[in-house]
Image (tube, rainbow, N blue to C red; front, side, top):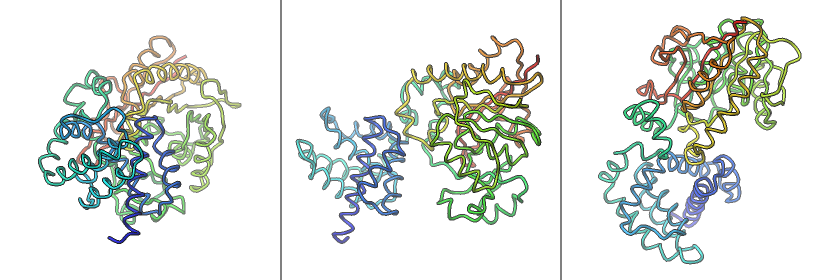
Amino acid sequence: MNMQSENTGLKARKAAIRILMAVTLKNRPFDAALDEITKGADLDVRDRAFVMNLVMLTLRRFGSLKALMGHLLERGLPRNATWTEAAILTGLAQILLMRTADHAAVNETVTLIKELPGKEKGFAGLVNAVLRRAAREQGALLERLNSRPQDDLPTWLADSWSATYGEEEMQHIARALQTSPSLDISLKPSEDAGLWADRLDARIMPNGTLRRGLTDVTKLAGYEDGTWWVQDIAASLPVALLGDIKGKHVLDLCAAPGGKTMQLAAAGATVTAVDRNKNRLKRLSANLERTGLEATVVTADAATFTPDTPVDAILLDAPCSATGTLRRNPDVTWTKAPEDVAKLANLQARILDHAFALLPAGGTMVYCVCSLEAAEGVGQVEAFLARESGAERVPVEADEIGGMSELVTDKGDLLCLPSKRANEGGMDGFFAARLKKTQ
């Protein structure tokens, strides 16, 4: 390895450590920290990709990596050794979970600790010993790392899922969240799924979603032409619950970044897409432009917005804790807390009440969240039905979602768990209920 590549590797690993600390210690969103820190480090595309993959992997396995570090450090670390801790965690992730050369992971991590100001540079020898042991004992340590999937969940989340889904299912979900997600693609309805599956080296999922391995989507056939858009299979299912919407006015509340907006428009609906976040709506508008689909885009608060013309149906993808998307957004695992769920549940209730009032008699609303918390899903719907006498739940039928009956609950709601269809790559966590206005 020449000096230039050594410096590049050092810069990349230092950036990864800084991003990890920004997320876990300062609750910064991963994407914002990644952009700011990698730009500041002047990393090229390849090194930026290495940093992103390393930090995402470390965040997915953060709890179990910390537990393993505790096993390897009998006396632990001093409280303020934040760089040292982050360095060990990213080093362990490289050695045990990535195809990184052991010597690079060890030597460059130790070097950057030596270059730190203050007391932490004195821990370089300790870091060296821990990482070299990890390299020697990879098999045994990897088995230990993978022995308790629930270690990669905060205690409150593991307890919540155990209470809702049972201990065994909680562990299945936790195990699924340790893996990298697939790339799921939604085609325009007029396109031939078989043809595009061949072109994109993808397989066709039961509902028509195309699934393949992660890659730079902008380089794939059909992207520039707007033939398809990226959307996890779970996120694509709620729109199907609205049935035939051709020619109907559908209100898409909390619409950004626009996957469901495009589904609605592609199905022939007249769509009004509402979101309060201007920046996220810019992405939605860009997606509409790329795909050649049309919708009226409005910047407004979904809890108070009233359309100028009556609506026939409503899709409410409510703001939520996003605990169903932890594979894709592992930073959420360590930045959310139980009080966030309670606050969001209150907000969801306000938006739900307001939105339902906009429906005509006989109109349908699909309420959905990318959360696995009962308070935001089935609990929210049960509370709404208890206070709204003019509403009834319309059960989901398996044939509406590609025959995937395992995703339909006893109450007739849609419940996608990351552990479902695990042998096909799993899915995001998602909940949806269909509600009809009876009077």
